[in-house]
Image 1: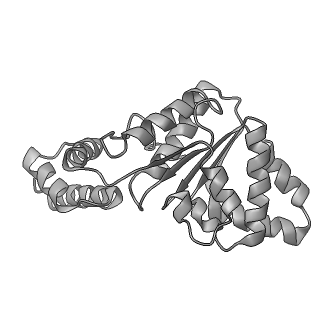
Image 2: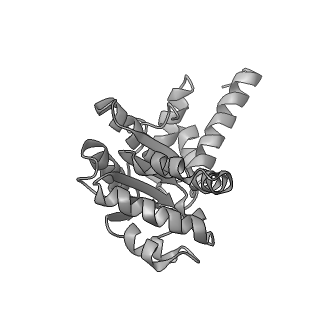
Length: 222
């Protein structure tokens, strides 16, 4: 887990407040609050941050929990390897006996029929065993192309919530926080300039902050 991806370091605003509250609720009451929790939104808006923050918070509360956090691509690759090596029994045990399963970019299941089938049964077993499932995607379940309807239906059993691009006030707060984490908060006019220039993607916003801070350090200029 990335040390920066905690609830304390997640800037909450009108466009991500519900997703943040839901992830926090799941961390406090796994398999009781929202199951599954399905977060969706464009690239670089904080989905991975919330997934990892939930994992970290769960471990802080209950260090004994068995949590498996990975990308959908890793799940697919490990399934293929298990099929090729004839080791499906161990693969299934690994995924179906955890307390919490967290998968990033679940939309990568599309067009992978055997992997979809395997995940379908894994999902069912975890859900009916009252184990927490947390998923993220770049789009709403109904809008994931070429994915089985029975999976779409299950993704919607719990809470589906969207993370949208942040507004100016949220972006401004992000610039302030990230510049402070770099060692020195930017002057307010610099924070406002960066927040006005980059509007759609938090990762690009963070990249701009790091670039400005690095140039300032390297060139010894304010």
